[in-house]
Image (cartoon, rainbow, N blue to C red; front, side, top):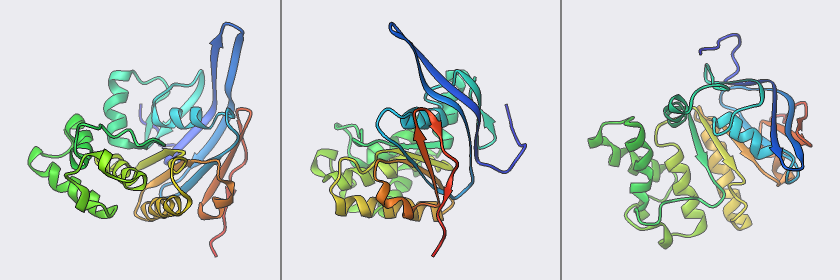
Length: 236
């Protein structure tokens, strides 16, 4: 379904998510309403268990809401079948994980090529060239033919970001992407995300690190499944 009522790249309308457990119903999100525009660098903050990752999973189409509407890049995805969601996700959302999740038996460049292979988004003859260009952009092209284990944590996260960009998605989401990195490397990774948002990507980052909130355009705070009014950070 196509949705074009407004210019928001991402919109959640009255979204709730509940899980049934033996002990009863757990309400992960409650009546969430939010809008995110193109080229915004967005932080989602909150305590562990507050609903941050659930929110991210709904935007990525990894999970579906119990009620409400989720619209991303013109598509209403809240009740889209998985056979449609998988190719949609491959084209529209790049995902960066805290622990990188690079395939250990593939070289770095092969890891970056993998999403292109799955989605058939670029001709086979041009995929390695594109992967190398992305690795150059994240400053690790000289490690292209190494296995992930030969790279540092920061280098592996840069490779994961290159992989997330392989199909040129408009949205990049990251769940605690610096949680496994030292502070200096973490700052360099955050700067890379900021640069990507200036280059036409909408970047959404779940983070516990409230002290870096000034680095973002918009901050949403999640508390017990509810999302605060967005805090817009003024440009200095």
